[in-house]
Length: 105
Image (tube, rainbow, N blue to C red; front, side, top):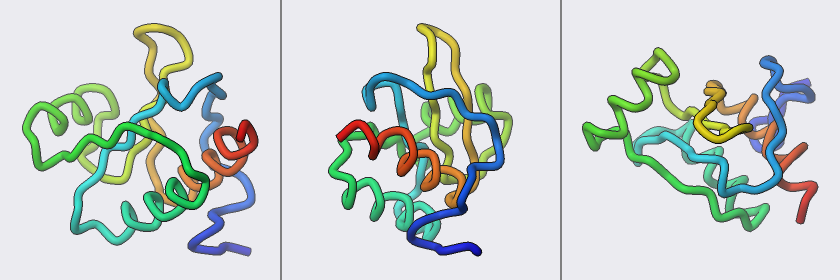
């Protein structure tokens, strides 16, 4: 079963776990309802994740170059320095945060 606030039971992509939220960045737009769902979970878990507004050209360019899509929200995960995994879909991002980032609190 799917729950908008809790996310899917499993994230669809095999996203790598990181040891710090400093290695995460959320690409988002202020008007996006799916981004707001992800940000609500970030607040609930009391995580300090960098937000990159894709209305700013440099963030949109980074998203397009790295992730290949302009779709938001997108969570950029840096498992190794200079290596990035781009996780799209709000439910997958929420599941990832609850499983990996929320568990470390």
